[in-house]
Length: 114
Image (cartoon, rainbow, N blue to C red; front, side, top):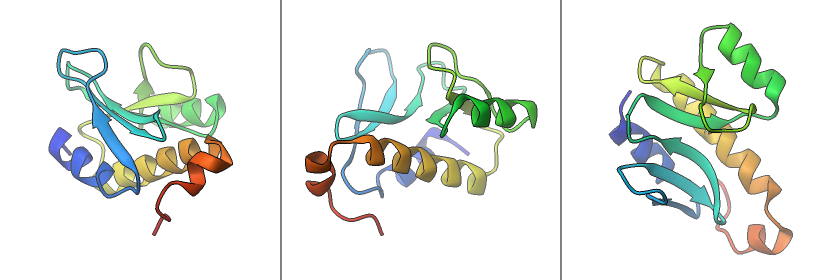
């Protein structure tokens, strides 16, 4: 798995946009202005949101992810050695969590999720 693969997957989500809000080579993927995935400038993997801190801890305990530094406890870092199917699943889940938390008006402005 690589930055290019993650960016390719994230670009398929309706309304997803990428930016480098902090400079220095970050890829922060957002929907409705809210971040759902982030690749840091150190390029160690991709940070994604999970439904809650308990799920994040379960992924960490299972060896799937690591604690995502500088993020809330409900985020995990999926290192590049993680399988593509797992990362694609977690990216989709993260996108859905963030999209569902948007206002109804913001959600209505987005194209439907396939």
